Image (cartoon, rainbow, N blue to C red; front, side, top):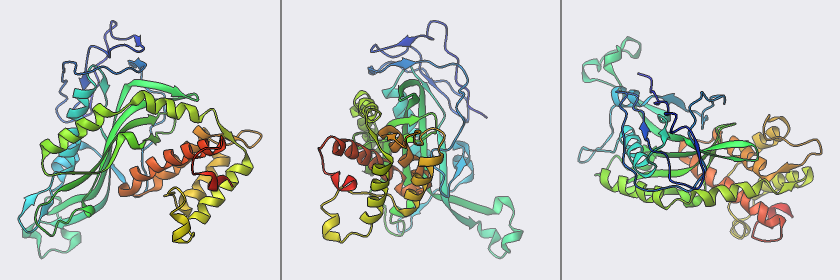
Length: 362
């Protein structure tokens, strides 16, 4: 069943700036279409708009690479759950991670519209039931096939909390990554690893805007409750207003075509620097394939390309990086997204003579 978001009442459909959030929380569950009403737990000091009209933005995936989109019900009904082989203890399943995140979001951001999760998976692991052990692959029936996905990423958007940066609407977004390849499933059950973030999503291109203060790249837990507690801590400690202000400042600084070419050239050189020299320079995680995409989009992207003089502001540059990052594998996607913000912010500081990123402009 498709998820349904309850329309706002006339009393709720108003703009609120630097005040408590709205009085109705809407959580859509795509399996049973349950609407959950939750009491307030905190306030958020952001401009909050309750949008009830259909979005005019083109639906685009937040990551592409080798991924495919799945629904939460598919993970629940069509996938087996991996175990730690030496003691047969189950892992925390992808769908459990997502549902725990939904629960945390509904508690920390009450009285907001919360969209159904967008889920992308990759690296399908296939199997078969014991009664089909001697069948050829092409003869297998659907009920004789098993599968799970080694890697999964999801985002949960809060479309009622938005702001505008350089003419682009951004919406508060929460998400995470799970990669079973980072677990030792051939041993006994151990601490399980997750990546979790809260940030914003640019509604023009669906690029994610993640920074280090809202991201945990190695969240290790041993139970559901521990995972829930740590996600709650990330959400409650996130300073959304500070993050927004940091991104808005990027639009106030521009680089020329020559400086853009200098930056891209230095990012290529960076990958081949001797280790001793590379250690003295801030980390750059984007490779040649990403840089080629950034160079192409500098000329061709509808939203973030150069102007008539060849100039581009740093908000546009940042989005060229996050757009190129969509071709990253799931397990490196969020780390590179954070690196894109750190890099662009570093270039901004270098333009005014501060920071350690002057090497990329020199």
